[in-house]
Image 1 (cartoon, rainbow, N blue to C red):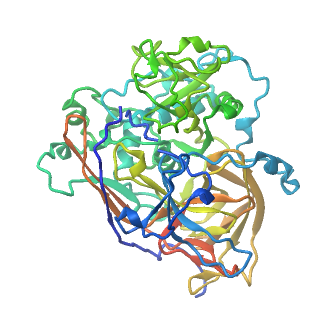
Image 2: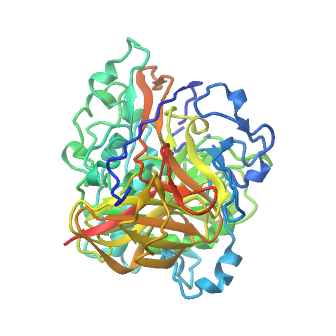
Image 3: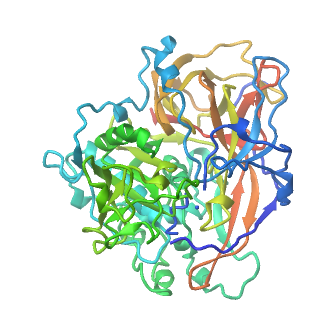
Length: 599
């Protein structure tokens, strides 16, 4: 369960910029076992909107006091447009538990320019004839759900839920694999959340990492002898999206990638000192993390996602105030007040439209419930599962997330992943969402892009990027060996080698297969330009160093200060104020990935 320690953020402003890696010619709720929010509309923010990310005086920030967006902090203007073709945007910090924006479904489906464009995630929302009752453990004799696990004393419900979701997608699309043969490592995922990983393509994100440090010289630092403080770092789905789409796992649970103990206030740390396998090189690639707000209005979408992927993760409030009958039913409600952020992450594996409202400790307004797999062992609930009311108010402000996974030999398997942004969340608290912030630019349709250099002869097959809103449409362009002059790319001489319309229904991370393959020679530079057609918030990685106050486990043992170190690659670009060129960003990186296959 979540435990609060009143952590104070310490900000150490420092900018690390590396330009040598970019080629050119010419000049993301606590889910912690143990609080957060959303930013729906920047227009709701009021007050003095000036601020400085390097200033620890909170009076310099604009905090939105609206109940639904109270965790947003508006910082300085991000641009100064001099043409109506460029929209003014602000830097906005959001709680790490940010809920996806609902978007405009009507405008999305009525846009005639995109009537022939299939969304990248269309199969996730194509199921028809939705049954009244469904269980992914028994679908025409097939079982897409792995065995219930026990997270013990760890704070890692978020890893157990996400690995369960990844496992179910693999099982759903690979009928030659039995659910009893599938077990992915929660330890590997949790370890690389707060450890540096090396080996990314051309090293672009090797200098983007988080780590646990003893910043204050606390003598109660025995856990550092075992390097296992990460076991008491809670997390949210943002962390999983960052790690898994970077291909830092998933890996099978075996050897050093398996926990040896999950109980015992000392054994939890001393028995798990073996280092997991290397971050990269696994046999599974996560190519999509599809996120939809978990409110009852989206219940059809969640059911379609479950039928396509086997399950979705969801955040809940695990207080005994709301659970009933040994954690077998759950309904949280807050008497008209804003729902608090989730403190636990679980897996939805099915549903029952007729599950009686009378079964819950507090009676919801109607029948119907989600069937959920928990990570508290089989003694919890009914064989480790429980029912969550459709009307649960915590789930309503959480994101339901499904994963799309490729294995070697699949059509969507790619050899290489070019990426410049490692994390979009600055984490200082192991427990409290409101202290951990996601960096964004306010909603707009301004173009942005990333410049890469091929390190071998390769074929560019696909691109991928992150969105914080549903029902998004884009036009993308691929430029080969663009001319960079004074940090700007103008495209005045050569046009794109490919232009393409793309779209997505869900928020989250999506991979978009290109209409044609683009052949790259070693040292070729290629620029990916994203031009949003629908307005949306733009998430980015903010370069710099940030360290928070010390975190302690429930036995008051020091687990460490979380130190964030993110570098700017110099490869990310944003539209200039006059709209005539793309300007290199020396303090941030965008989450645009390029997927290539070796020749």
